[in-house]
Length: 321
Length: 166
Image 1 (cartoon, each protein chain N blue to C red):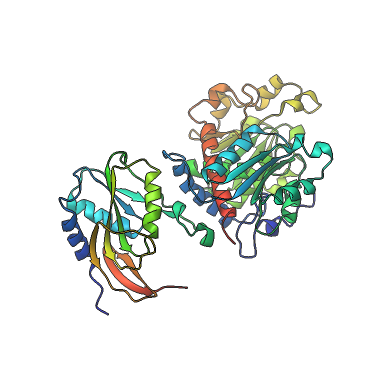
Image 2: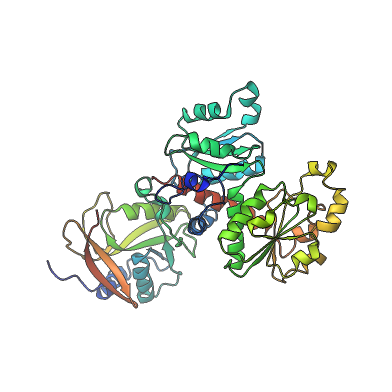
């Protein structure tokens, strides 16, 4: 996949964030700036009036070529708390089915004076294509493209880890499950490596771990017990049900036995390890309810922090150049 | 131009002006950063029972469209309910009035105070907005094109007049 000039597309000549397309190529300093900026927005959501006027008068289009109610909602809440006007478009069921091309859709929306596009697409690289064709000053946020990237999820996971663990440089982080199909895992791995996490592990069956994933600087484990040993952070990935019917996996029950997180397996990680999940969870498939609802779970704080991180990204992209 | 006043003396003068003029359960809220230093001192001198609050006004500034968002780890913390209470906003220097406007917006995001007063260490004039202080330590003359800046050197407040960068 030729997505290489990401850094230059995402960052302006002055190093400012222009689009958010991938955590790959995002400098550590930029990631830290996003997390620091998110700090002040966490407190906004705790107030009686959960709204600040930073993006007043700006129009943000949520353009979802692949539907996702939850992700779209978190972007919508973030934009509304910044006082932007939000327009939701489920393009999957409108224009494309009538034969309009991706760029025609975008040009049309741009003609309605959009300031920012939040794009989800089943094709890897679609948000990059859009970012290359929008007018100067119009920003694009990738809300998930194919198997490639889901940068705001990766960043909110970094915010969550920093919140509980303070420092990245001594951590062992395990990402467990269907790494092969997971854009979330890719975004997490790039961000973790950039922030200096010394040991990033991926744990899963051979059929669900991408070839040559070691090149990203991770250690591969097929045995979950070995992989979880002494971890500070355990990130469970969602197992998409449609994978179950193919040749990749025998059954949900078998998967849970080998790679599902229960209390016994979690006990192999450090006693203060945190458990994360990008949601939505499949209870009893990748994670046991006792763990999902347990003392070490930070799955719901992830959702709360996600709003603040998306507010941070949007306000930075809405800053004048 | 006359020498700049000593801020530590001005804080004591300001406290005396406020004594008895604000309600006993009034909440003091300092505006970051200089106003927070002043508010800390006033809170101690006036022995107010309501805990001290601080306001960061970044999210309500009117120049976001010009200068954008800056790294800012400070956040507003108001450890009391503002609803129905007299709140005294405290700042170091009153100039254009824009910071006070932003602070009022920020404050009202936390609730509806009964009344809001403004206490400033120094009023240097030059207002852009219809804002006036209820209590001022002093009025200070500063040349056009200069900023009156409060600094905190090892816990001691000091004023300096610096050329405005433009």
